[in-house]
Amino acid sequence: MAKEEFLKPYRLAEILRPEIAESDPHEPIPTERQLAERFGVSRVSVRQALALLNEDGAIYTVHGSGSFVAPPRVTKQMKLLSFSQEMEVRGLKPKAKVLNVHLIESSTNRSDDWAGITEPTYRIERLRYGNDDPMSWEVSYIASEIAPDLLKQDLTGSLYTLLKNNYGQEIVSADEQLTPVLIDSATSTKMKLTPGKPGFEIHRHGFNVRGQQVELSRTIRRGDRWDFKYTVRA
Amino acid sequence: MAKEEFLKPYRLAEILRPEIAESDPHEPIPTERQLAERFGVSRVSVRQALALLNEDGAIYTVHGSGSFVAPPRVTKQMKLLSFSQEMEVRGLKPKAKVLNVHLIESSTNRSDDWAGITEPTYRIERLRYGNDDPMSWEVSYIASEIAPDLLKQDLTGSLYTLLKNNYGQEIVSADEQLTPVLIDSATSTKMKLTPGKPGFEIHRHGFNVRGQQVELSRTIRRGDRWDFKYTVRA
DNA sequence: CGTCAAAATTGGACTAGACCACTCCTTAGA
DNA sequence: TCTAAGGAGTGGTCTAGTCCAATTTTGACG
Image (tube, rainbow over all chains, first blue to last red; front, top):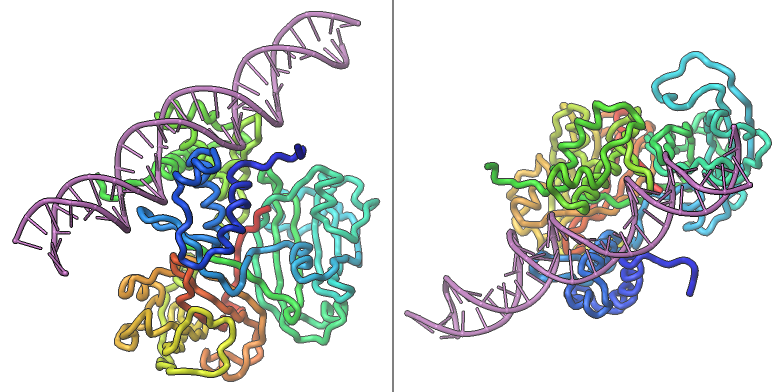
C-alpha cells in the first residue's frame, strides 16, 4: 500500500473523471445514491466528489433531475497561476537573475502597504526568465526577522519555495493589484526591450497561514509574452 | 417571517462575524464543539460557517489547536467583479451607450472561440460609462437562437441581467483572457481619449448552467481608471 | 388521446456520532 | 531542574440517516 492515502471524495472524483470524459455531452451520470452504493461510500462523500467535478466544469447538476456531462470548453483549465506554474504550462524553464540585494535598516515614507513588513527589511531586485528570455522585472521586500540570513541563500530560484523550505514560512494567499502600463525606458533597458511597449504592473501582498503579511512585491511584466487567464463564477 | 430563509452555515457565519471583528488578532475563538452546542446546530454546519470565515480571511484555523482571529488586511475584500459590481464598489453609476447592433447571418473565419455561438448571431457594440465618463468599449456576440427579439430590447443596461430576466439565460461562469495593450486611435476616438494610452483587452466566453457557451465578447478598457484586484490562494 | 394532480425520484441541507491526526499540557522519572 | 511519555482536547474526515425542494413520471379522469 502506498504511504500517501488520498482522501475519499478526491479519489472518487479522479475515478469518475475518465468515465465522464468518454461520455457524450448532456448524458446523465448515475444518481448520487447509486454512486454511493457502487463505491461503498456515503452520499456526502459522493456529493463532495461531484462538487469537485462541478468546479472545473466536467459536469453540471440540476436539482431534482440529476448530474450531466458538461460540453467541452475551448479552454480547459483556467486558473490564476504563480510564475513557476505558468512557466510549466507554457513549457518554459523558469530562472531568476539577481540584480541587487541589500538590507534596509529604516526608511521614511512607509505607507499602509508595509503593514506587517517590519524593519530591517531585505530588498531583492531580480529579473525573471523563461527559457533565457527576460519576462518580468521584480522587486520583493521581506522582513529580515522572518528570513535572517537571506543574503547567504541562492536567490535564482523560487522565492516562495525558499521561504517555505528554509524558514518554514509558507505563503498561502496573496492580494494582487494589476494595472496596465507602458514599460518605461529604465525597465525596458533592464529587460532588453524597446521602450514604450505595453505591460502589466503587479503589486502583491503575500500572507502566511496565520494571516500575517510576509512579502511585499512590485512586478513589471512584459505584455507581448504574457496574458492572464482565469474563470469568473457567479 | 421573511420569505427568504438563509441557510444555516451562512447565517451562522454572519452572526459570528461582528464578534470576531471586535476581538484582537490571534485571539482564539470558541471550539467547534462549543459553537455547535451554543447555537444548537451540528458540528458540520459550524465547520461550514468557519470555512466561509476562513475564505475571506476573517479567521485562520490550526489543526489540533483551534481557530483564531486573523490580523486585518490592508485590502479587505479582493475578488474578481463584473462591470456593474465594480462600478458599485467605486460609487459610480453604470450606463451603456449602444453604438451599433445588427444580425450576422453567416460569416467566414469563425475560430474555435465561436464554439456554441450558432448563427445567425447578434453583434452588439457598446460604450460603457461610469458617471458619464467612458470606461470601456465592448463588442458582444449572442446567438439569435437564444435571444430572438434582442433588437427590440433596451440595451443600455446590463446585458447579463437582460438575458436572465427576458430569456431565462443566466450566465453563471465565464473564461476570461486579459492582455495589456496600447489603445489604438480608432478606439481612443470612440472613448474620447488621447491615443497611445495603456489599457486592457479582455476576451470573454460566458457559459450558462448547462455549460453551454452563450456569450462571446471583446472589451477594451482604459487603464488609467481601472485596475484588477484579486486574491490568489495556494 | 390530452390534462393535470398525485406519487416517485432526484438532488440539497442538515444532524448525531464515530474515529483519526495533530497539538499542547501534565506528570512521572531521571 | 530537565526531559520524555502519555493523555486530554482540538480540528479533519467520513458515515448513516432524516427531512426538504425540485423535477419527472405515472395514472386517473375527461
